[in-house]
Image (cartoon, rainbow, N blue to C red):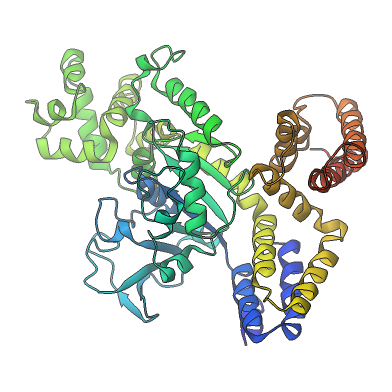
Length: 502
């Protein structure tokens, strides 16, 4: 039995445990079909947080997946594999399982470079499941999805056709989304993210369970970005801010990154031989180096002592921006080791901020994210029988009435507001998003760096305001959100009074 098989497996936290107990208690009270659905919810509750990586074609999704995993295993060239859903999960033995549309599985070896083969040689594939002995995957199952094409607001139906029904099941458990965009700031990325949600889990992306990465920022021409002062990274931050304005509140943040540099630094692709080749290039005169770094063709065809093939490999691993940053580091400190150069490249990639945000938004909140997703599944699984729906509804209400389950109420309110299901004045919407999606107490209050007495007074004042709003002037839907926000502020006030602010 599934419940027995799952015993001993780690749950993300007390909220997941409460929802798991709910599923177990409800199984004898629902139809067999609903009970089977609850078994799948239980399995997902005991699994690591499932993060789908989504984005347009050629946005660098798979390169970023490799950086996240810390191993170059996902194919990055457009081919058969990049058109399939691939799930990367923890396993005690490295293996690839190709899942066919009829449910059968076929085990395949990795290629000579340790990657998923570019050509699988199997017909009727639904998706791929890759099991890796990788510590990162103990906390996250990473789902690499097919690149989405250009979409307009009316294209949700076409996007749903991107994945066959069995493939959709491979991503239906995704509880969080890392959405990858490139420097072309486009208003329809908002609808693309919504379409991806519709095509997979049909769970609204929001600031609790979604972040975005603005990739390939090394291709930004800083002179075209006002306020950049000619600096590539400053230009990237400005563009990320513009993209955030388009995508919020669908995402918690938009962070600039260069996934190619991150992949090379994190997966061991950058070698001692690469460092030595860069050392030789650093010895060239400044004018020659400037000319070579003007274009990829000039870099690989220029006549110098470093073989053209070696330079081509450097270009594939680092591109011109990474090569330039490495040469600058060697100019400042010629004796840099290969390991030190790798750290320079990692720092230049911006990946540390992406990984830190993943930890803050996803890993630290895995219990709440997974429990909220599971409750949504439990609600949707209830059959058409009115009695069954009522029993499920009543059980969920009992769970949510517990003080320790307030976080689930807050996540629900945040989703309602961020999706537009409940409309509030812009300043109130911003306040709900801040309270619900920022883990730091002072950040929740919008008073970072302010003294404790001010935080205490503000929390109590806002608790009273939201309680009054819920009772006078709010619509029923708004009142539902307002009561939750009032409770959140009251709990913050209690925490601050007890000395729990850190």
